Image (cartoon, rainbow over all chains, first blue to last red; front, side, top):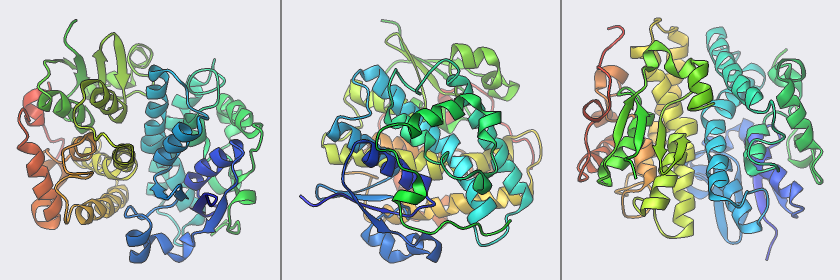
Length: 215
Length: 215
């Protein structure tokens, strides 16, 4: 059986969510560079051959071609028996946090970081302020939830943690959120995840050079 | 066993996603009005007692209190044996579309409609244009996918269809998208869903008066 191949690029926290699983589960995998900033995922060839949704990551594994980080994480957790609680109630709670991540947390924070630091065009200040406000509201909800918990669901690391933390390991100059001071519970939780065996930071395990489009 | 209680309000397509399941599965349920426009979901009491994520819908069923429409739909499909494919591959594909809905489709379209027509403050034009562009990109992906398919996954209605279509049954004056002409495949798929036995339009099955905050 060939090793899983993760189509990814270093700046993508959605790709990193899957890379974290593969690394922390001790799996051997092969990164395949997606040249996102040259427009690869907007190319009709990508949409026909890899992912109709026009996104990375795509994971090739066991003859399948999977997309959407939350679906990939669910597949990996179920087939590898890692980072997924056993009770039905907790599994549903994991799904609930992954959905919240997609809708409100990553959904706003990643777009904010992209427009602020990575997009070729300077962002509209009103759009930037709008996304920042929505990301901050989501951060407050997660920080409050983590007040008396080590992980989002149950007592151990789950794919909910890997999903929501995906964009939190990028340097502060990319997103400008002072997480350590403004969201101390998120900061401690983030450290707990980074201390898992096998964990590697995004720019060291996925292809692509770090850059800032502007200062 | 008491009937399930859906905490909801008529304007919420996320609530309507769950109401569609309950109606199309022929279940008896009780709507509980959430006074969203008076700030109920932002109230600390709601966040402590109902949903820490500060959102509707919340479904009370079988002694549980569930939130996030995608998680509720998954729970209902699995426990009622309706609107969920049997194969693992198709189940993962259903989850993939529900995640795309939360991240890109509803995530942008619902926010656009809210700011355009329902929010008390007039929206910033740049924010409105930004959200509209992102919603249109998501609509194009779904319309293309539905070119030669009756439903999003497999050959039958699934919770993926209920999730993505939730906001498409509101009057055009609320969102301004000319779906019939601009997205004909989405339009036909929407009609297929509205023709399911038991289907009822949002303002007829959930509490709350229709209004437009501005013209």
